[in-house]
Image (tube, rainbow, N blue to C red):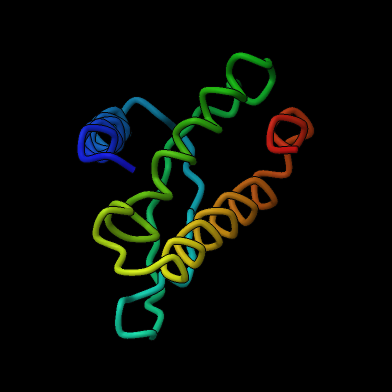
Length: 116
């Protein structure tokens, strides 16, 4: 991930957090984030949504995008800071697990279809 993409992802995540007060529901995005030391640290973020968003394809895509943006914060810093290809793979796997867990928790057929 380039520095610009990392900054853009950070701004997108901040926008999600600021908009959170307009949403009635939230889903926990959680994963064991890889650390350069080889250890893992459990991290989580709450992603806001309105239940009605899951009733339409566009709404479900918007929820999916917010969940995806949150995985950058949950799973660690940008890829430029990951020292090896192995860490890059661990980071990607962390993001995939975080996405899958949040989608499963929401139990929305539309969201599940978007994820697959």
